[in-house]
Length: 144
Image (cartoon, rainbow, N blue to C red; front, top):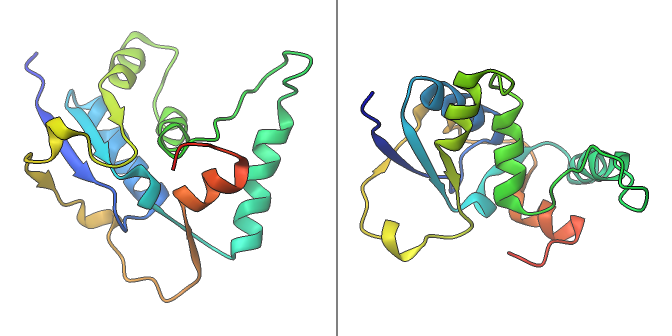
């Protein structure tokens, strides 16, 4: 199976819509690289979105080493979202998850790469929204 590398710039794209599109692509055998994960948009009231993500982090007890361990970094938050959309306990799901690479910012090797536009995840938002970077900063991540 020939794997094709698809580079997607996450700036201004909607979180769940982008994640579902990426999940479909990696399940079809594409290798997907998502850049600027900190600029992906989560729609909703700021305080409610923060409370939702804070609850997910607080469910896992780190002191007792009991999971689930929820990520705080923007790139890992996006990977976790995609992970929930694929059958990760099957061989196909594990192979697909390995084909996903998410970065905060743009690494040097992808600066000149041609970026694919995901039309499904582009929407002019008239509602309130928060970026994944702001969420990860709220959760205590040191990487912005």
